[in-house]
Each structure stands twice: as structure tokens, then as C-alpha cells.
Amino acid sequence: MNAADFLRPKRKPDVLSVDFIAVMADKGSADAVRSLVADQAMTSAHVQTGSLDDTVELLHAAQRSPRLLMVDVSGSAMPLSDLARLAEACDPSVNVIVVGDRNDVGLFRSLLEIGVQDYLVKPLTVPLLQRALTASDPSVRMRTGKAISFIGVRGGVGVTTLAVSMARYLVEHTHRRIAYVDLNLYGGAANALLGMATNNGLADLLRDNQPLDAPLLERAMTNQGNRLFVLSAELDYGTDLPVRAGAIGDILSFLKHHFHYVLLDLPGRSGRIVEEALDASKHVYIVAERSVYAARECARLSRFIEDRAGEPTVSLLLNHPQEPVPDRVQNNDFKRALGSATVHDVPYAPKALARAENLSEPVSQRQGKAFLAAIGQIAGNLTGSEASLQDDAAAPWYKRLTGRRRAS
Image (cartoon, rainbow, N blue to C red; front, side, top):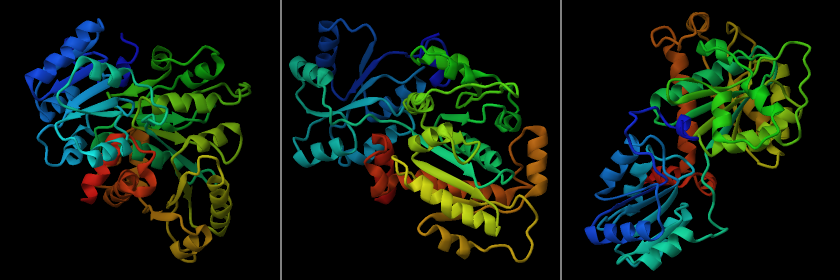
């Protein structure tokens, strides 16, 4: 199996699997790219004529995403909006070169701002293409996925239930590939909720001193279908596993280059593992129930998270693991305690969640309609936040394009 095949949905064995794909709108441009391929003796390349729709179809059918994609927007009145259609077909780490017929400085700057590697104006020549493909610009941002952490103010507030529900929602309602990392090294509940066997893949990665690569990660992860991959551990109680400084950060950095979302199920509120996970996170969800203690801990935990080097965005998930009763702390009290953090309310759904947990199935739409609606709202807030100016600088190019299209 190719080193990165497990990161793509499994498809027919005869589909495209190359490092460089170019789809040009005219034969002359395609011939120029083919001349470059021949001149450089590139053995892992595919060049054809076609439209942007053909490019999207080709990427959907590919066994894995290419490392480099060259796409033609000639004749497009709204190239930024048209490029957004690649959003569901590209891995976050794909480098994109755009070809067009408009010698427009404003367009060039806009493309660079959203993370496109280069913009080439026709007619294409082999030297021009060569410079574009070999250019090494340190200002070009590496496009990566997002790490999202879920952390509770205490045990039993539903961290894993909400994180697993979010993972299932993203898998079902988007075309993204999700990595779920259960950082409880002594056996978290995520695999049980998903109906998957638990292994010691995460522990093996932490023990192994060799450089992390795709085959090593493939052996460590278990998967449910083609879009949900789980990294976990189940050490024997009493077993001590020293974790070197930076190990968790290295693993998460690698995952973010190959998955659109990396969901992190955090086991506690402090320690090296938790702190490295928070540093790698773009967004952190604090999970709490409605008690005075939870409100106090939310405020403390929020300040701790916001002071991290990565400065993640913090949101609060107010869960109802127990039957609602009067005299609970209200939403406004939590908002005052947390300041600017967004507060999401998750309704009480004991029957739906108990059945889903015992059968290792998704929450039933019939029994858990309100709960699933809340998960959908939280997921929408997460994915919709990619359109904001705050997130634009760090989001992958195609995600920023998607956000601009929504805003237009």
C-alpha cells in the first residue's frame, strides 16, 4: 500500500494516484505542462485538458490527493468563488498553482492571501512553469487541518459523548476526513462508543523513537469507514509510559497535515499531554454541567487555555448529564464567568444517549432529535467560523475560499 493511501477513501485499484495533477483549459497550455513533465522526467504526474468541474471530478476519483495541483481559471468571471468548489476534493496540505488569462495584480494578491502558491498568466512556457514548481517561498503558509480539543471541568460531564457525536456529525455531513485522538492512555471510552476495537497504537507511537511517517501512523490507527480514523491506547493499569516533551505535539502536527479535523479527547485538566494538545489546538470546547463548582472551574480553565502559546478560541458546552432541576446555574451566569466565550446548550437526552452507548450506534434521530440539533449547531459554528477574518490567516486556502463564498 502506498504510504499515504490510508489517508484517502479506499477506491478502485485503477484510479489515479499521482503526485502532480494539472488540468488546463486549452491544448496549448496542457502541451506546455506536458513538455515540463517530460523535461523533468516526472514519473508521477497527470496532465489533461478540461474545466474546473473536470478537476473536481478527477480529485474526487483519485485514490489520494496530489502533492501539487495546477488548476486553470481562464475565462472565469469569479475565480475565487469557482476555486471554492475544490473545497470538498482537496487534502489540506495540497499545494495549488492557479493558471489564468487575466494579468490582474489584485487577483494575484487575493490568491496569495488565501494561500495559493502561485498565479501564472498565459501563455505558459516551460521556464515559467519550472520556476513556479521549484520556487521556495518561506512566506507561503503550510495548509493544515484544525485540531479541536474537548476538555471537561470534571469527570462525568460527557466529554467523550459530545466529542464522538461531533466526529460522527462531521463524517456524515461533510466530505472531510476526521482523526479522533483519545488521549486517555489507559483506555478512554471513545472506541466503545464507536463500536471499535481498542489497540495501543498511540502508546506505540509514543514509545517509538523513529520519525513519524504515514505507514507507521496507518499501523497505529483503527478506522470506521473511509473518513473516521481513531488513535488510542489501552495500557494496563499500573503501567508507566514516560512521554517525551514534544511527542504529542509532533503526532498532532503530522495528523493536521493529513486530516481536515483532528478531534482531541482530553483526559484531564493539566499535565504535559494535555498542555501540548491545547497548544496544538485551534479551538477548545470546555464541557461542563450547571453547578457553581463548574462555573468556577470554567473560568479558571478558560484563562489557562487562553494563555497558551497557540491562543485557541474557547467555547463552552453546557451539557445535561443529569435530569434538569431548579436552582441550577443559568447560561447568563456562565457567560459572565467566561467573558467573551461562546456558550452552547446541550439538552438532556438520557434514553437516546443510553441506547446509543449500549449499542455503539449513533444517537437516534427519533429519540435524540434535540440533542442532534445541538450537535449540528455546534458543528456549524465550528465550520462556519472558518469564514471569519480572525481565522482566515491560518485556515487552508480552500476553506478560506469556502468562507468567502458563504459571505458573498
